[in-house]
Image (cartoon, rainbow, N blue to C red):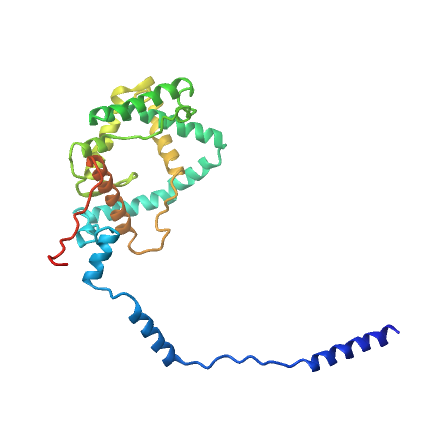
Length: 292
């Protein structure tokens, strides 16, 4: 009975479908010529674009002046010691692969709270140089902030092992003698690759010597002249390298030296411009001929 009922239902369905008209939808024929003609007519209906319409649009809605070749950064970098710099770059790459990276990778295996404490300790020491350089630069507000960070982290932070000052809205913003020289108007000078330290310029290399002289002269807690000084510099270097993601020749580009040189010098020039800028730079609007 079930089979007979199912067969009857199928026959009824087929009979219903047969009584309904079947409609076949066809795609419209492709008419590229007609479509192009219609598109041309629609384009003609749009407002004409020209000097007058551009002037009207500018008056109705002001827009930024167009970019000029002067706004594009120069790709040239002053590198008179390029042969020596390339040799130092290759030396740093090999030293980094053979020594620096294995040591920093082993350092990363230490517990995270220990590495964070070491990083905070070296950051707190750098606040001493920041206080001195901010004062020389005439930026007393930032110098007071660095001094506040130094006092808070050295006491409540247990010799800088904990960054308590950030919780008090005292942001970490280190500076050095290289920035002080830039504040005084000294140009970065020729590009220089320092062995073991990496990309630099003549001004920044002198600034690094000034930072070391400042730390050695103040000699807080006898860290720089005692036996601890022999491990202080390498420890700071390993901690810094472990927090850097840069890897030599990782991009596979044959122009890695040129790219690193350009990016480093361009960053310095932008920082120098920010040091001497009192208000946002405004590019002059282009001259509009009379009658337009």
